[in-house]
Image 1 (spheres, rainbow, N blue to C red):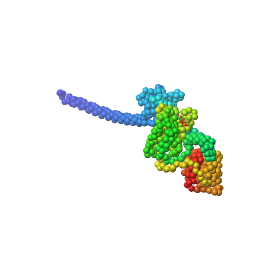
Image 2: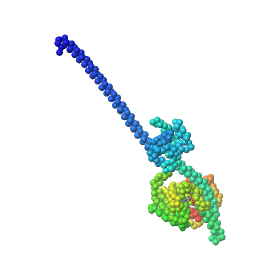
Image 3: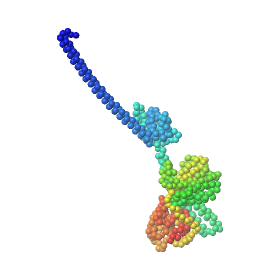
Image 4: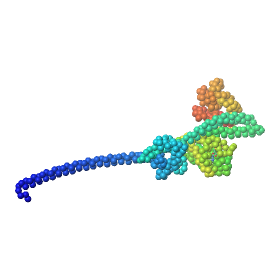
Length: 559
Ligand SMILES: Nc1ncnc2c1ncn2[C@@H]1O[C@H](COP(=O)(O)OP(=O)(O)OP(=O)(O)O)[C@@H](O)[C@H]1O
Ligand SMILES: [Mg+2]
């Protein structure tokens, strides 16, 4: 304890100083504490901003990665990433797996070279270009799928650098469908070109046959059956019919054959043709399997008969030791034709099938069977026109034909013909004896030999005959002839003025005049158009006297 007051005072002063210092210290400490708290707070705030920004960036990255993955995998084109040096696949999308038939894991073990990608004469140049940093576009390659089949692809590639690695980004367009369409187009063009040629030859050939047939008919009119030349003349007529069948095949192929479509029940036609065929090929058994309530189709019966006979004969030829031939009809729709390269018109169809158990065909033969003059039969046995005409006729009916064949196991031909809502009309058969008549007939044809023989046939039938060697002359005669004209036998194709124009002009002058159109074929449906304008009938060259007399009688009885 201090012993005097001075000591106390000093002691107090000391304490006061100490307290003052302590206060200052405390204030200082408080200040420091406050400041570091603020700093800490600031830092925490900043840190959370950084965290939030990073999170946002991560989310954006995830989203973009998701978008990229979806695009990559959903792309209708194949997309691949390759290592530039090793050509190993780094990434591939689903489409690439689909076309190559590999799963992704398998592909990631392989290189572009394993599939043949970039592997052809240009390979060096293309990869070189990529290595030098250039892109390339539209380079075509064939790549090998897992099953060994080759796929045509068009490649677009560019070099990219990702994570420090030099890569190739490549997009591949599958060209298989396009190549197939190109092949079909070339095939169609080839068929079209040969068709034009065949059509032209057949037309001239028909006129020759017409002249031979006409003259044979005329000679036969004056020969009794006991005459020594009678059988020979009959044989000439028979040969003409064979020749006419050949031209009919050619015209069928060229889609220029006789084309008189009418609503038809194919079951009747199938049954009749099968029966007729069975009589000629006894070693073949024909089994009919015909659908009840079969849709009606608009068909040229003669042409469909030609189709069926060709199929039956081919089937029989494929079964030289005899066998069973199954023919079927069925109602169906365009749905049955789904997945084909062509796009069928929608609606109902009638399916005709001809199934044999013969020797069948290999793939190369199958690819060529519809080409005219393609045959595997020995010289003199086949002309190779059968299926060509079948093809042309089916196309002319807006139908489709398909073949399925296995070597040693047989062949199935399937024909789809569009159904119609029209009703079948009963027309009755044309009588087949010579029917003489009276009246005046004008015959028009630019082929002198056809005109001559036609006029002689008409005269032999008892008609007065006027002749016109061309369209203009026909119009002149119709204008200037003083008496009545009962009928005109009018050729369709003539150089100066065609049948269509002559028809319109003479109908203007003599509206009641009957017209029978005669032609070897109908060019682009010309005959049909004239028939639609009120022409009274159509006769196919070469015709014989029976057919001509029946047609004329038929038209003139409506007088
Ligand atoms: N049912 C079938 N079975 C096996 N091969 C067939 C069959 N049908 C057609 N072919 C093959 O298709 C080829 C062409 O047939 P196509 O009918 O066009 O001509 P072709 O029969 O040889 O001669 P053509 O019919 O003119 O007398 C035949 O030569 C044959 O090789
Ligand atoms: Mg044939």
